[in-house]
Length: 383
Image (cartoon, rainbow, N blue to C red; front, side, top):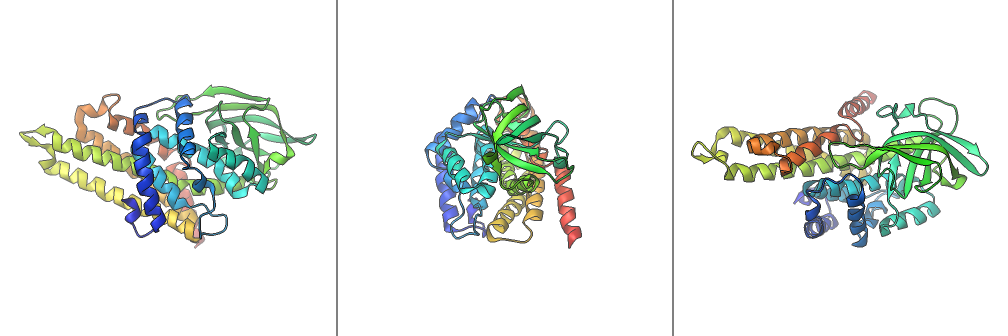
C-alpha cells in the first residue's frame, strides 16, 4: 500500500485501507461513465457525503498546525480515485478545490454555513478563477466587483469553472478596485441561484470534467459574502492552488498505477511469436521504466504532502515539483501501456484508451507544466 511509505501515520494506513475498500464497493461501476453533464459527478459527491468521507478533507488535521488540512489523507484519497474512476476523482476534487478557500480563510459563520452543507452533500461548490483572457496569468482577470448598496455587483465572465450551471455555490475572484496585476482582487461566495448568473457554454473536453463558461451581469452579492479580507483574493487563490497541486500529482499517480497494472496483465495474456509478450525483453524494459517513474512520482507527491502537514519551508516548490513530475510521467506510463496493448489500446471504451484521454488534461489544468517550472525556478533563485 502507498501508506507504507515513511511519510504516513497509522491513521493514514487505516484511511487508505478503508477508503480503497469503500471505492471498490460503491464506485467501481462508475468507471466507464463519461458523463460530463454533472449529474453523475453529483451522484458520486452525494455518496461520498452520505458515507462520511468529506469532513476530514476540510477540517484541521488532528495534531497538525492550526488550520492545516491533512494533505496526506486527501492525496491518498485522490490516488485511489484516480486509479478507480476519472469521473469519481472529478466528483471529489473539484468541490474540494472550491472548499479550500473557505476552510482556510472563511469566517466562523462562513465555515459553519458552507462547509457543514458541503459535508452533508447539500452544497456543491465550484471554483471560479479563470477567464477567457486570464488562465495561467491569474493577475489578468477583468471580472469586477463594484460596491453597491449593502454589497457588490459582479460583472464579467469566468471559464473553465467546475460544475458550471449546477453548482450551489461559486467561489468567484473579482477586482474590487481599479488596480491592475495581483492587487485589488477579492474572493466572494456567490449563491449558484443568484440572479445575474448565466451559463453561456458547457465545454466538451477530452476527460469527463464538468467545466463551462459563466457570465455575471449585475449579480448582487452581499458584503458578508466576501471571503477573507478585501484585496486578499490573489493570495487566497494561490494558496488554494498550492495545496491542490500535490493532490493533482496523487490523482495522476493513481492513473499511472492503473495503467501499469493493466499493461502487466495484458503482457502476460497477449501472445506474440509463440510466447507471452511479457517474456520479450523490450516489453520487460517498458514495464521496468514504468515502475521506476511511478515509484519516483509517489515519493515526490507524498514528500510534498508530508511537508505541508509538518510545516516545511519548501511547500510551494515541492508542490510544483510533485504536480509537474507526476502529471508528466503519468502521460508517459499510460502511453507505454497503450503501446503494450497494441491495436486494442486505441479501441474506444477500453481502459487504457480512457486513461489516455483522461491523463492529458492534468498537464494543463491547475497550473500548466510550464508554469510549474517557472515556480520551481523562482524558488531556486530566491535561495
